View 1 (tube, rainbow, N blue to C red):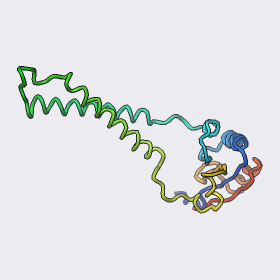
View 2 (cartoon, one colour; view 1 turned 180 degrees about the vertical axis):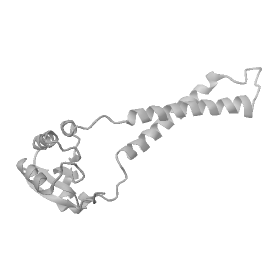
View 3 (cartoon, rainbow, N blue to C red; view 1 turned 135 degrees about the vertical axis):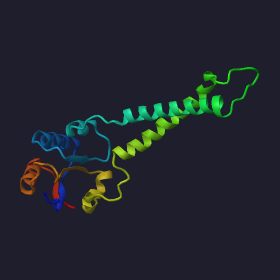
Length: 179
């Protein structure tokens, strides 16, 4: 049984997005897989360089919408056909065209709820604590700084070798992140 590493990883700061993208590509080509980049704005190039795969969120939203659709239709079918049948003007007890508005609304409601909860779950939010919060410079990650963190749980991670590798990418700052 292996021990839990004493550090979370190594953090490097880069001055420009293009340097961060080059660093992410080089890190990925070197074989590191457990890493993340932090930028104050979205960047497709960084996402591609990190090698992120597509999310499962669209599938979750589809499943949530289908559950809402079937649930709304089943609820109305049971209420109008079994539990509380009303014969109004000789019409059929089970009339599916009348069920469409409520079924549609429940489909949208369930899909939207699944999208919000799924997004939070897949992003690991809320996250009131993260080891990077110990790094004073990291407080500027949401304003004007760009960071790359290689995590200690990566199979290739070795503190000395990984630090040497990160410093070869010419960051403006490089430090260990305590757990």
